[in-house]
Length: 260
Ligand code: NAP
Image (cartoon, rainbow, N blue to C red; front, side, top):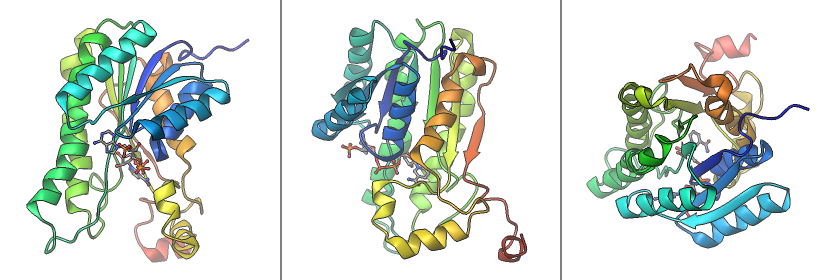
C-alpha cells in the first residue's frame, strides 16, 4: 500500500480557513498530515477544521493574526504542543484590496505590506525553532503571478508584496539550508475562491477564456503544488517557484491565444 511522505507530518496553514488555504489544508489532510488551520476569525477556522475532520482529516483550529509577532509565536508553540513538533509551515495568509496609485493611501500600503510580506517573515521566524527540530522542515510560501511576473491595475502594493516574498525566500533558503529546511513558493494564477466567485459568472467566463487550459484553477490545484514542495520527494529543491496558472502567463499576445 502507498503511504504519502506527508502522512503524520505536523503542518500549519496560515489563512487556512478560506480559499487557497482551505484547499492546502484539505490536500494535506488527504495525505494523512495533522493540520492546524490558522486565521484571525476562530469561528471560520473551526468551521473549516470541522468540515475537513468530518471528511477524515486530522485538523484543528487556531486564532492568530500574522501581523502580530506574539500571535505567531503562540501559533508555532500550539502546533508543536498539539502535534509533538512542527514539520511544515504554509505561509499563505494574504489580503488583496484594490486601489489605484492616485487613491492609494500610505495606510492601505502599510496594511498590505504588513499582512503579506511582514506576516510571511513573522510566521517563518516564529516557526523556525520548531522546524529546526524536524527531520523534514519545510516552508512553502503562497506568492502569486501578480507582481513577480505580471501587473494588474489596483494591485501595485499587492504585487510588491508577492514579488517581495520571493526575494525573502531566496535569502531564507540559503540561511536555513544548514538546518535541512527548504523554502519554496507557489505562484497561483486565477483561482476559484469564495471571493472570486463574488465577481460574477460573466467575469469568470471572460477570465477562463484568457487561459490556455480554458478554466480557472481550483484551490486543490494549488494545494497539490504546495504538498509536493513539502514532501520528502522534494528534499533537494529549495529557493524555487512553481507557477500554477493553466498557462495564463504564457501567450505573448491576444493573437497568440486566439490562434491556438
Ligand atoms: P481568501 O479567500 O480571502 O482567504 C484569506 C485567508 O487569510 C483567510 O483565511 C483569512 O482569514 C486569512 N487572513 C487574512 N489576513 C490575515 C491575518 N492578518 N492573519 C491571519 N490570517 C489572515 O484569500 P485567497 O484568495 O485564498 O488567498 C490566499 C493567498 O493566495 C494569498 O496570499 C493570496 O495573495 C494568494 N493568491 C490568491 C490568488 C487567487 O486567485 N485567489 C491568486 C494568487 C495568489 P481571517 O480573515 O479570518 O484572518
